[in-house]
Image (cartoon, rainbow over all chains, first blue to last red; front, side, top):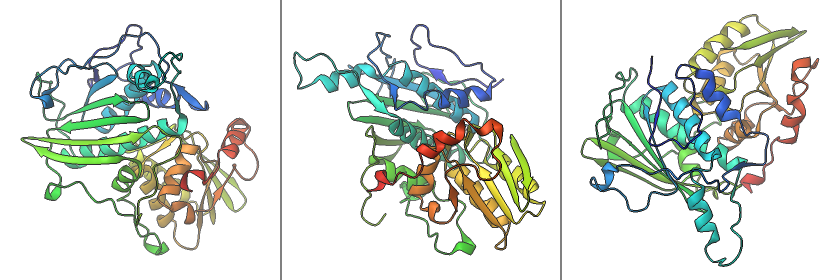
Length: 247
Length: 129
């Protein structure tokens, strides 16, 4: 049995997916579609706390409200389940604390607005995270990822991916860490648009980094000792970020 | 990998009964499609109405199927959900494929619910303004 992704702290009443039900990921991802928005409503569910942030030198961060940490095995099915957990958490308002707090700034005295994330922003989050995580599965850990190892305290063990999310009013900050191989040349791929003008020789790959860069802001890749660290910001707007020059 | 194929004259209608075409399933999808299109239908229509998520691996698989059936046959797409349409739009693959708002031909009864939703969500273009 493959281990399911570990949620740092699951809110009371949060459903668990059956560990070996691959369809659960799809169902969870599909749930909520068809609505204009997904509820990031300010529920009173306890905010998730990141118990330990290895990238912060072992210090427990001062403010963990509105953050979500998920650790998942570096496999394609692990990514599916991890994404399902992200969206289950989003629907339960796990990140709502930060969203509501930010949204209320400058509106002192006003009733806290109910933050709503457009469905297209949820779709964007799912696509970007899937691309980034599956790239790690494929390239950092190779075609045959090692069997998921147990997580040691404060360290991303080989075969595991740590995903940290924190929400602001208009943006989702994402940091992904893994102990796999570094990116070639120590840099994240440029993600240039593919040439699709030659219909006879259409590219079948190379779209992943284009989509990541197209849909994120402030992307940063750093190779830390024994660890890849990729961070970026996903706008929560209904419309995609402006098309950068040349893309 | 759940695919259902129906032959209607020249058209082979393939309905994808999966909620996701992603890295975990792209290779299976590609292989299953290659078997289905081996019947030689000149026109293959891929009904993606139930597919709520498609990533770059899924996109690559669809492109691979198109290339595998050769230049004399057509692979068309139908009933894209908004998330799937966005991937085709951002990568400009929407200019390569003929994309139908709804499933063409005899309407499969099971698809009656999906078609109107897909129609309403078709290429908005607004995101790319």
